[in-house]
Length: 351
Ligand SMILES: NC(=O)c1ccc[n+]([C@@H]2O[C@H](COP(=O)([O-])OP(=O)(O)OC[C@H]3O[C@@H](n4cnc5c(N)ncnc54)[C@H](O)[C@@H]3O)[C@@H](O)[C@H]2O)c1
Image (cartoon, rainbow, N blue to C red; front, top):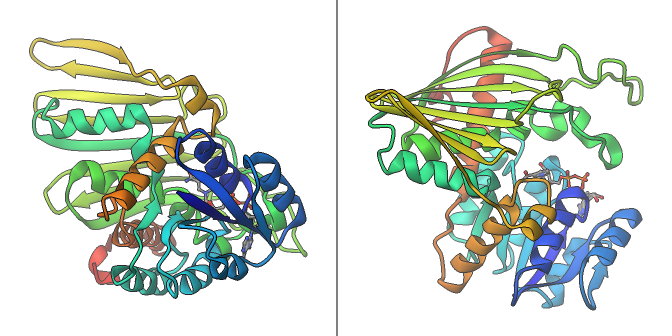
């Protein structure tokens, strides 16, 4: 499988490092307008690769079978427009797009795209998370009633051109960052959201930064509550000034007979039952070379294996453009709830 990487910044490099350790897969081309990123990509990929400044030259080259879109969020819509003119397989990084209109357009075009179209909601593929989801779906909690996801972490990192400092470029923090968790909610709960209530703000981070005189406008903490059509309640707790945390991600699923927690990077699952009242801890080991090939607890590697399987077997994608669209819409609904101080029905987004 010959891969082309569009955007060899931080996430593009993580994709290259993972493709490097998958037999039968190779990065054969990269495209990035930034010299430093092109050099980084060339140094990370193994063997001979073609290096382009303009991704359209890569698309026209015939030298790749699949492309990874790892450019800034606000560029995804235009890059995808060009890719949809080809029949290449696509893994598009999250969020699918930054606006509902663009995400709808991309999802509509993806439906008739010849190649596999996959959205990079890779948190599903962290080994402890995959196991957690299997256990919840297997009935280990009884009938699921509540699902909570906390991410407590460090602030957004610096990016080339500082694109991630402004909501107009990212879609807003609850689209940019939390689309992963909204996707996870739909995946775990196996239902669709009907209503979203949120409270959040920018209280600590980036307030003393200036870019051409403008102060960043990206929210750094929020609580988001989601009511699902099947009656399950979900909650997301995001804090981006919480380096002093034992785990970065903590999930908990509680049903009528038991509870499961998933703790990352500890990589432990905690199983609890009500009767008898007891708690057991199981460690989920992740291969060392896989852990070292990125910053997402092995997710990129296992996502690539699944993406390649979909290509070999002619689909279907496990994370579709429609999943990408719905995660964006949930993030936008959470932002609207914060801005307007009211619960927001998903029907306002036509979903
Ligand atoms: N799956 C995850 O967990 C995860 C983690 C981080 C980032 N991401 C996503 O990956 C994407 C990239 O984020 P990043 O952190 O690597 O950003 P980055 O700024 O480090 O890298 C982006 C790269 O894209 C290049 N670029 C900009 N416009 C381009 C264009 N038109 N054609 C080709 N290259 C172009 C930039 O020069 C830069 O090298 C974003 O959509 C982001 O949301 C996903």
